[in-house]
Image 1 (cartoon, rainbow, N blue to C red):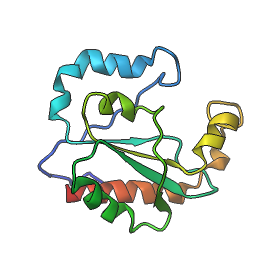
Image 2: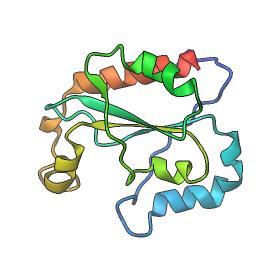
Image 3: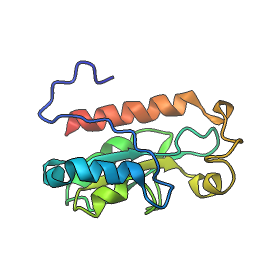
Length: 148
């Protein structure tokens, strides 16, 4: 969706690992490599535990400037399968928030239950994923990136 993107800002796609481990290896490696460049980041969008076939996808905001949150929510709120949800502080976005980088987190509204029963277990199988929800999230993020 971003193949033709030529906007003002660069877009980086990161895949962290180990955030559920006590040492948060992926986050720590990123901080060691790029920690001095945090002030150059406009915002972070964390996509975690999305696509579950039940419930909606939710988004939440962290340390966003006035106007920024309203702008992004205006985009995300147009998507039927997305709704504003509760903040959660145990995700990869928090390493950025702790370094004063605004963040948006997108997850399943059933994430608390999924973390207890499904996520990172043998029950975490592809048949639980609604691919249309993934497309909707990708479309919403594409629109957010382009509007910024």
